[in-house]
Every structure is written in structure tokens, then in C-alpha cells.
Image (cartoon, rainbow over all chains, first blue to last red; front, side):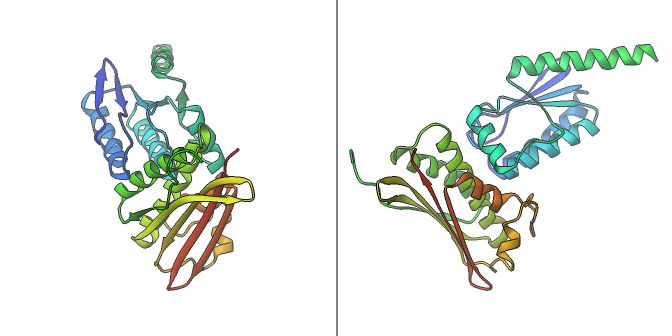
Amino acid sequence: MEVPILKQGDYLIASIQAALTDEDLLKLRDELAERVGKYRSRGVIVDVTVLDVMDSFASRTLTATAHMLRLRGAETVIVGIQPEVAFAMVQLGLTLEGVTTMLDLEEGLAFLNRQIKTKQGAKRAR
Amino acid sequence: MPGEILTEVRILIKSDADVVTARQQARSVATQLGFSGSDLTIIATAISEMARNIVSYTGMGEIILGPTHHGTKQGILMIARDEGPGIPNVAKAMQDGYSTGNSLGLGLPGTKRLMDEFDIVSEMGKGTTVTMKKWKR
């Protein structure tokens, strides 16, 4: 099941619609890395609200994706991790180290808006 | 017991798509056995990890799901079995951070934390069987 990636202004929004295989996750990672360049995006939101399981592979792939996109110049926010999923992840020892997470899409967008403002402010101050 | 008595479900694991099937089946069997809420997620996550181990380390195996009980306790029995190379040092594989493959090394010890009972038997050249139980609260 392919993940639709929407472009919204400076951001890309990947909204996961159904359970993903490992292959789907790797495809999402590669697609995002490419599109961030194509659309010169500053931020990426990956919405995982519908995921009922986040196992070690999914966690590792999403962490790698966020780090890759940062190297490409875009901030990534993972939004929508459900409470039971968060509980199981912690038990498994999966913490998405170094990745920004937010409650939902709205919070994710607000975070990116703040981040980009701060970055632009820093540029102007130089 | 209301409704039909559930017998065991077997899922052949040979590709990453089967990992998704296995966790969906696990959720469905656990629901039929009367589990709910975060227990369903925990069971599906544990099965996902075990199915993933089979795909990453041995290529093929099976997951068996079914009911179990102990006295008045009711629960789900989950068996992950393969005929792969076996794990050379099971004690070490059960330590956090240890991994021979491309995983984070959280698979076995992490999954054990999710379960009420966890038993692993591995024989070199013959394969590995992980037996897990989760009791209803």
C-alpha cells in the first residue's frame, strides 16, 4: 500500500492510510528524500495515526528517514502515535531517539511553522 | 464460553508481507479470545517482531496462534517456529542490544517484556521455536 505524499506550501505531508509492509516503509523513505529536493520542502510530517503496530523495523526506518531528511535540509515530525502503540513501543525499548514527535497533524504543522520562523530569524541576524 | 470455540490458526511466514498478515491475524485471534485495548496492540507487536525474526534470519517459518489456559486463567498461546540455522547463543540473544542480523537487537528481550510467558528453544542447524503466552486481565 503506497503512502500518498501531499505537498502543502513548504511542507510535505505523508499520511499513512493502512498497515505498511517493510517494502512500503523503505519506499516512503526514498520517496520523501527525493521529493524534499524536488519541491525544496522545509518540513515533512509523517502521520502514523492509523498504524496499530510500530515494531522495531518501522521505528528504525522512521528514525532513519527523519535523519536523512534533516541531512537534506528538512525537519521531520512524526504525528499520531496512538497511546497503546506508544505503550508497546516503550516496552519494546523503541523510543524514536532524536526524532520530533507531536500529538497530531495540527501540532505538527504548528511545530514546523515555529521551527522555520526561528531558522529564518537566525539567518537575518547573521 | 460463548460462540464457537476457536481452534489454532497457522500462518506461513516467508516474506515481509506475511509479517503484516501475521500481526493482523494475531489481533483478530486475540479479539476472538476476548482481549481488548492495549493488549491487542501488545500481542500484534510481539507477533510482528517474531515474524520479522523469521523473515530476517531464516527466510521461512510459521506462526501458530490459539487459546490456552492455566487453572482459571485464560489466554492466547503464540508459537513462532522456523527450521533455520538456530541461534548460537540464546542467553546472549536475550540480552538487550545484542543482534547478529540487521535489527536493533531489541527483538527477543523486548518481546519477552511484552509477554507474560516467553520460552525459547534453539538448536543449531535445526531451528528455533519461541513459545509465548499472554493472559487475559
